[in-house]
Length: 558
Image (cartoon, rainbow, N blue to C red; front, top):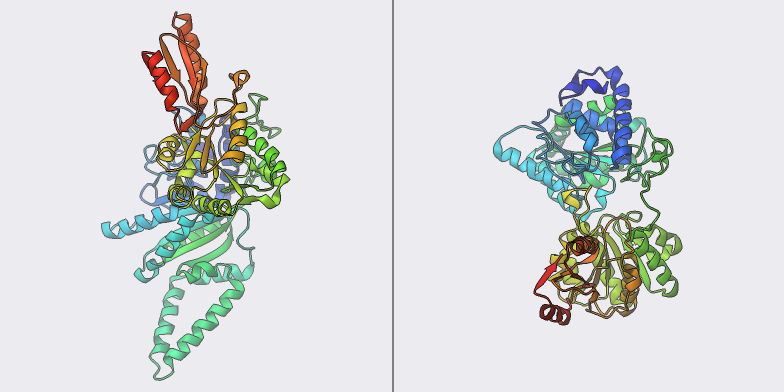
């Protein structure tokens, strides 16, 4: 069936009896391609039918579909004429693994970070009304994104849409069934009744009629409202949203295309904000992903037969070195605690949790809270370590500055995926940490060039830090380069690893390996180049810089 899908409108020609066949073809396509290139698999396997339903109801590119985080947009890309792009998914000059407006006019809003879709959607609704257009706007959020505070800021602001009689559809993609279990026939009945425009008008007419009754009208209206709310509390698990002024529908089966199409069409007719709670199975259709959805959330190339990653090396990753060192030190020091923002596996802290469940804290996708949470623990003598992807820590910049640095609390930030990250693209590059952390008072910033140095930096910081410290390390395998020349760490001091004559290269962190390659190439051409590992980005070793400036005419910094 997939061979007939080459345009956003092609899916509308598919007959309902063929929906299951198309869904099966899409999953085969995803497995065949993502197993080769790597990427976000489990979430996309789980959202196949939901995305099909959205494409059957919406009119692309006129209507606007926003994916929160964006990693679950693969099926949307397939259905909007980008099948061929999967040959080079997440490759250099290839198709992005996230929505990208430059890639297609069917991508309404770029994304890559979490909890932003509702704010963007609300902005689009406002623009729609000011521009006097009539497109449908839908935001798809889930996969933990509702643990981010920004989503609740948007929900709070969104309540005004009911008074203004403006439509906005939110799809809550619940792929863990963590919000509520399906309540069966009553849920289906309430959904159908409550999404009929006639019912919405009827509710308003009854209340207006009661208010006109002399003397007791207002009291009867209050009694009616209380009775209605009491009944809804028994049957409707979405009262939280209802209380915020957002009509709740669900939970409904996210793998039932006709049901979702019917629900979406009804929701489009309402002049109010609606949240449709859709229950899906993460990893659906591929047993290894169903059994271990966390492993297949974002995965490197793997064997379709076994589900095992095709490893390039047996050497430990920087993430593993950091995690293993933290565990060893935590065995000796009960004040060490570890914090993650919904990424225990990606940051390696899952192993820490197994050893010290009482000293491990997953705060959800809430980097701002995580930073200040760490500050609070540090203020009372604990040694908090917040392991986080570099690109995500920037979401907590104000908290680092105001809540950590001003108080000079010894919070340790393990900046995973620092530097260029490649496949995840522009939204995930860890290239901004040096400039934004360097301007923060009391902050120490360190960058190891190999696995041993990473381990020693973490140990040194755990036992000697007097204020906040960030240790930045790259994605992938830990280097063993120059490990045999390791020297004891001294605060703010760098290390000369190779003397030269014509010039010297000061190379920070993982880029040191490239500097070493350059030195070898230049040596073959007759040049003697020095190599320096600064170790500390802040404070920078000024004494060393002065010495180098007196020794070399040319100093290169990488």
